[in-house]
Length: 167
Image (cartoon, rainbow, N blue to C red):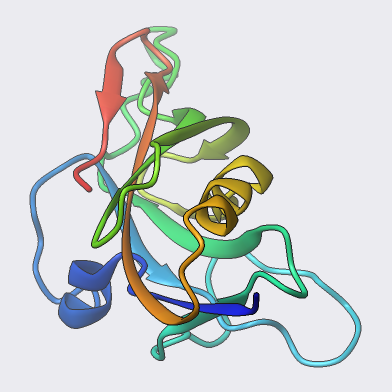
């Protein structure tokens, strides 16, 4: 049975498009459009933002892989005069994805990404893992299914303070 799944990944993110500052130190900003050509290289920011819906045909793919621009709104807090080092860099350690619209289990996967203080990074996230796609296939739903994936990033700042982004 062929199932085409349409994702509203980070729907609030796509609607707001980074226009609303939520005052959180670490912010999911936008989904990056794939780079042109064969090279899969990103700078610290998206060259182009993907503003459409994401589709996954589980007959042909076993996971959904996205690249997300992340902002760190904390300023550098180093002071060379006193020997203080910057402790506001964010070390993203994992992504937690929850779903609505259909009964899929939450997923969590490990990451190793750094978002510098007062800077940006593009990180790789799997909103749909092999296990989630397999669970979707077991539901036996044919046709197109709308699923909202809510992605949260978790990690620590350079000083050990834990953070978790809003979904």
